[in-house]
Length: 84
Length: 220
Image 1 (cartoon, rainbow over the protein chains, first blue to last red):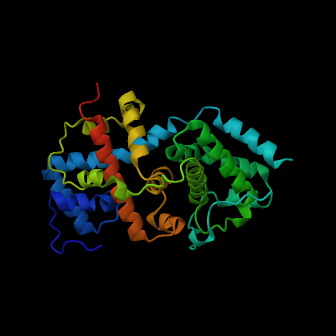
Image 2 (image 1 turned 60 degrees about the horizontal axis):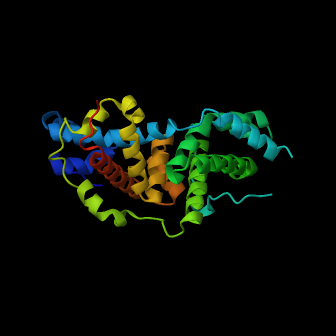
Image 3 (image 1 turned 45 degrees about the vertical axis):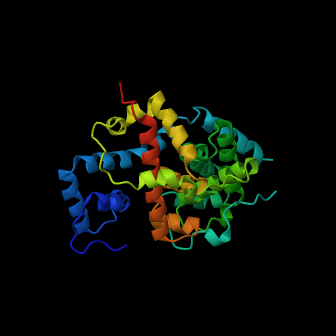
């Protein structure tokens, strides 16, 4: 994607760039502009925290639900099915 | 019996996977070393379950998906050409098994981001109005506590269920496998720019759905 030539970032532009920002895909000068904007904009900083948190929370939420005995049941199942 | 591993050839990875730490185990398993195969199962089973649960949403069905996934892997390990990381391959097999299970139950409910246009419109909104004191921001400061809290778990369950199935699978593979954009593009048969765009829209939507569900429910 193309980035602003002058690397200025307003609140709307920042939201567009968040995906590449959290995935560390932005050119250094654009990342620096995003950092600069966020250091002075509390709503954008809060938005970033929420944007980052959502997938991390999904990951933690799903991993918490893994049954403690899944591994033993799975290994037993696989042994039965593969050692006929 | 040969199971049909639901990884259509046209979306199989086509580039070399650099630095796959599972490669030695995969090589041993491929020549019949069952201990090596079990080591791969032990290493990945929790995250495979999480991917499956994120898609089918039912723990018993998620466990069936895990069983089907590793059985397919065992029977088709020869088909894994080592061109993507083993973890990316196995998670894609799991997500395909999970999506197939869902579609057997609800063939019409594939879902699309366009179906969620009202929520997407809110998700595209600027950050103006977002506050460091919003419930979601406060929960984000305490991620471990948040994931264990009943109100957050309910919100996560609802928000995940609202996401279109393919977008959910993409998000889960990125979150649980840390798959690169390039790996995701190859395994989903699309472009890197499309992966970036879809992931970004899905994260925005997920943030919005969580914000809506947690509003007025800050951490105690």
